Image 1 (cartoon, helix red, strand yellow):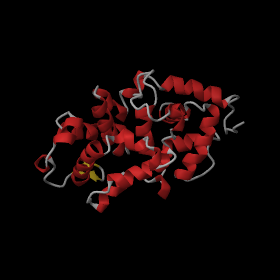
Image 2 (image 1 turned 45 degrees about the vertical axis):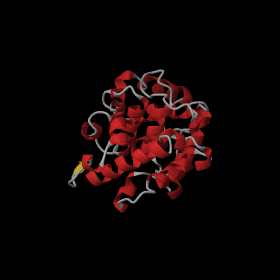
Image 3 (image 1 turned 45 degrees about the horizontal axis):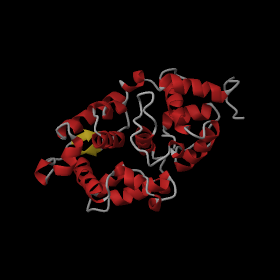
Image 4 (image 1 turned 180 degrees about the vertical axis):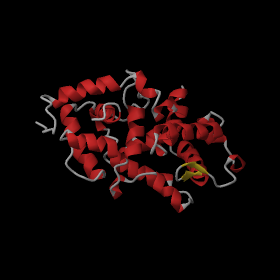
Length: 259
């Protein structure tokens, strides 16, 4: 039994209830997942979701505004823009797009994504391929190496995580949650069927980490790849089939209930 600092008789029942409560359509309007929800085509959803997840740090309203700026730059057709852009369509001047993510970074992301879709059949095929690692965290690290195998600005590498180097890969794990988990409740998309939702990892950050520690789900003080491994074990004990549904509970408790 997990020990919590709070008097919660059955933590699993409590978190199941909170997960159900916060995984709702009401969640979408204030969350970066709003951006991919503006599309219907699979590739548009995953490209807009991927880029939005990459810049998902800081104030959520600011993230949404910055992501909208990127989508507008792509003529509101991200897949078509990725496949058919030429150098003249890229940013000419260096400018900030979202905090430290700038036009130089976006230019490279556009060029690399074109190669990902032309040479690797898209994001899903790389991240579902067992030859790229026997679990998703290893495949995220492999994806980073593939993504940056073209000539690239060194500064741009910091915008993708590498769990094998210790990163919690919060934003990438959030993107995977969006793509893999069922759309039954209308929040996540359930677009990718080559990855089982039981294999997903919690998008661990300062907020979900704080709540997880208060609830006794996490002892490690640093939000890194080892902390992700630790909390994954606890969440999979509570729900082996869909452990990352608890992301909604931990997030909701912290943001909406000031837990």
